[in-house]
Length: 325
Image 1 (tube, rainbow, N blue to C red):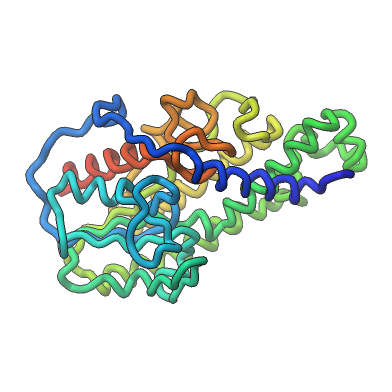
Image 2 (image 1 turned 90 degrees about the vertical axis):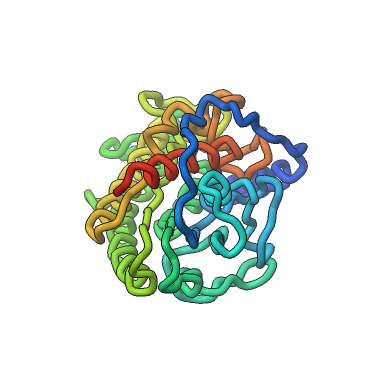
């Protein structure tokens, strides 16, 4: 029986989720080299965290908050930031939610276990610190990974030359980047267009954030590096065709560039988590990686930050908070 690549990819990702749940609970040593911050006086709250799964930390123990379907961890970067800044109780609130798009900041978000209220509703004139980590779901990054994994498995099974023939012998497009072939047609990159559209939505969202919380310091948090630089191979960790590693890395960099541009255009701060996470992506050694691969080795969702990654992201946010005027 021949398995369609998309079906195979979906099955892989589902298996990853099941496996991640079964992995034993682990805590990373607080002396992890990634933690380079120094103590500082507590920041003035209240602090509100907005965002998607990279903010929430699905499958990282312990899962907490309401609704349960948002899959927030008490060790995600907002919780770590609040802890390091000495913010407790009413001075810290995390309303991030796995699967969130920019639209879910202003609308109710159904989950598999409960409904998350519009995230911006938690803002008010008393809010003094806001972090926003969102945008990946607006460009369909999760479905892109699924498609690219399926294409990568087929590419590997057939081999480059056979795969090219199966695609009709089109020599104008790289056979080692089957996913890129899908998203780029006639010189038009569908994903780049999605990023531009998400940028327009983010600009409107940041205007609304400023309206609701005029006294808050606002930080737009970028995404950490998922795939390696200077390498076209990712072993068995991600099952991607060599050229698609480069393509997906480029799209993530473009997404982060858009987040930076929109944040600075709104007079807000951008937090770069990409630079400190390079060399710690899904294809790096399991005891140094920030991002788990398709089959996680640590308690975390597939292709998402693990606890070390959330710590690294928290350190990046703390550096920005402590050095900004």
